[in-house]
Structures are given as structure tokens and as C-alpha cells.
Length: 365
Image 1: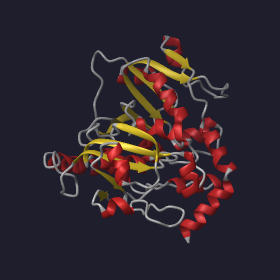
Image 2: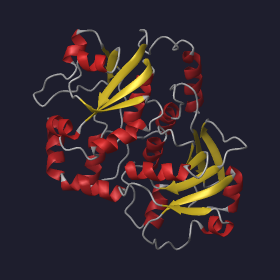
Image 3: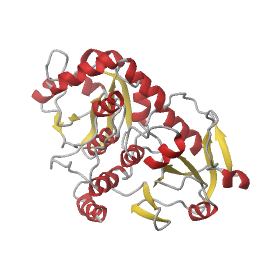
Image 4: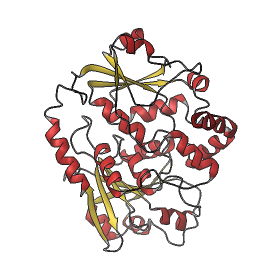
């Protein structure tokens, strides 16, 4: 499997990368990674994980709503939502909200950062000027590699066109990204366990190695679609984690969402939705395409002690997925601090359709 090859590569490189960044230059003490981070997705996360390899501490600057609107267009997530989601990522040590769109020497000094990092894509102001021009001249800029795949505009385009596609076309691509995203806070060692349910064999198979629960850990299980991961999802996972120590997240397949969810399917593919969950500190393990109905065998297999569900409007399922946990008295429903849902995110995008279409035209031109 490709993940075994990549894992061996990481292990061989880890010792060399203690003091040197991936570009062969010395690591910084504190590194700044500014961005919008709208519709926070796994490509944002891959960038942050790579950024962490450039310094001992990773500081993430998040642009405010006004800056984003001026230079890029209306953000889908608010500044508060974008800051909260970014702060929840494993490799992020601190978040600076209301970060300036143009990165300067004084802004680096303000947060005691040695230099800033940026991806391959040019970040420019509405006047077309390079946002990193000053720090590039002063030698306090490092450019990272590019991660092809999903983008914020890609997600928005799927919503507006009602077209379902995926940025992951090969299982090898998924496993390589999953291995990187499942690493611990250092960005090097395995941490988040990834398991796939093989429906044909009726068996659970390890996809990416990770940390398993200790015998004293109270294991909590949640399940859902987690389409276009947002602050509502994070709030739910945080509420669920309060019931134990080790959180397993089951991510429904596209067929399960269509069959039982009463929708036309998810905006993101199953693999994309799984990758979006892996960066978060609160997630200990992910099960890909678990059975819709939680069985006693599954409870025993993973030593599940609590099954958490959200308090949603009544669902007209033909079967109750939580029947067994309810009978065992281990099922609980929680209310979350956020009322944001995937449906509300979609509505936000459609409300600003004209602005998004203008942005997409500019990108194409």
C-alpha cells in the first residue's frame, strides 16, 4: 500500500528535519502563516502541516471579514468561525485574528516571528500588488510546495452548479494525503487512526496507522455525513468529546447519505469529507463508510461506551441507526453552541452568488 511507503519515507526524514526545514534551511523559532482560510478544507490543512515543519511554533494569521471582502470577495465563514476552526487544527500553536492582508516586517515583529510562509499561489491585493512584496525583499519569506486538489472556489462552484465531483481520483492520492493529515502536532508521527469498513467482507481494515485508545480511555462514537465541515460540526464534536477521552468519528458513504438522508447526496466526496476531519485535535480516529446501523459487534470491536447524537428535527429513517445503543443505555443527545449546518452554509453561498461568479470569472481570466 502507498501509505506504508510514504510512512517509511517520513520516518527516514524525521531525524534530519529536527533542525532543518523541508527546503534545507534552518527552522524558525516562530513562523507566521497568514490566510483567509474560508470554507476550511484539507488543502488548507496540508498547507498548515507543511508550515509547521518550518518552525518550532506555528502562528496563523486570519484576515478579517472586511479585508477578505476588499481583496477577494465575500467570505462564506465569518472571521470568528475561521479563527475557531483554524485554532482547532493540530499543528497550529496560536491564531492571530484580524491579521493584515499585507504581511510586513512590523507585523512579523509584533508576533515575534522569524519569517512567514506562503503556498505557490500568488496572493495579491485588489490593486494587483504582491501581498508579500516587503517581506520578500527583506528575506523573511519562504515559499512552500503546492498541493493540487480542492479549493474554496471549487467547493463554491459545486454548490452553485449543483455538480458533484471530487478532487481525489486515485486511492493512492487519498492515502498519501490521509497519512500526512493524520500526523501528530509535530507533523511527523502517526496519530489519528483511519479505518475503512469493507462492506463486502463485513470487516474493519486499517488504512492509516494511529494511536489506539488506552484501556482506561472512555471511547465515544459519533457518526454523520460531515459535508463541508463547518463550525457547527466542530461544536458537535467538542460536545461529544466531553463524554469521554477517545473520539471515533464515523463518516457515512455517499450512498448512505443519499439513501437515508433524503438528499441528492453530498457536496464533497466521501474521501474529501474524511480528509477534512483528520486535521482536528479533537478527532482520535475516523471510520470510513461505517454501517448505518450501529451493531453490538461494532460496539464490542471498538469498546464504545458512549454514542453521541445531535438534537436535530425528527428524521424519517426506515430503521433507527441508534437502536442498539439506546437499548444499552449508552446513547445520548447533545445540543451544541452553534446552529450552523451544511444547509445554512449552502444558503450563504447562494445568497452571494453574483459575487462568487465574478470571482470565478476573474480567476479564469
